[in-house]
Length: 298
Image 1 (cartoon, rainbow, N blue to C red):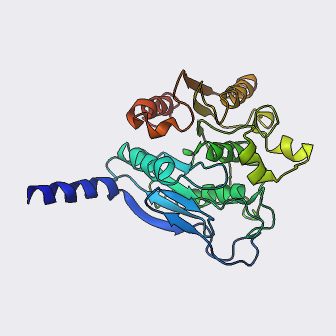
Image 2: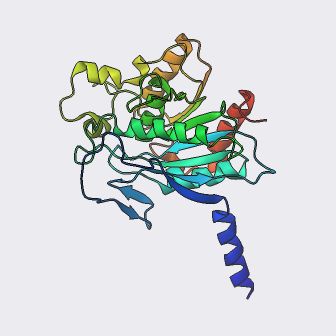
């Protein structure tokens, strides 16, 4: 009987913050093309494949804990899959426990079978997520000026693209919604699409086999930073063999030169995907301290 109680209580602790899953679009997805739904969720490995219906999983903290901040989380996976449990739902639960509303973005992966322009499909979904959270800010007890975006690996590229391309709506924005995230949290992010820095798999999946120089420049976010780019927190491992740490360093340098508030932490060891083996409290505590020092949370 005691064992049963422990299991039930553990289940409540893990899942109590999850409120609902909301589709990003109420009608036809702009820029989509007719196709069959081949989406597949591998719940054992915590992966999402061939995302067809983009959505946000909503994690709202209890009202007595809520501090008004919100984070939209973009899982990584090289723009070929979403590591949606470890780099999504687990992180969202952590934020909710700390009083931060969190939204796991299940974004469409670049695929000409389901979208007219695969290079902008993920960005369209991220911009729509910003729009959706701001529209529901009052209902969800969120400060509309404290909505940030977080990304891991290729999801970090998507988050950084959202933070540098907010003046470039990739779908109709007739309501003139503010698509700018108020801050960015980038974890071992892909930043560049250049030959010297870029992650080959992510670039191929997003831009195709032989992208032109203008396309490469447009999606190399270290080249897209302006004075209006939102503040950023970056964390990476120096021995990352998949996404070179120079991605984070180059983005930090661009932010610094534009006097955009930024903080970077580099672990000497940890390789790519260190969130899988470094306890969340260890590295997320650095993130929470940065949010507090920047006035995002109290």
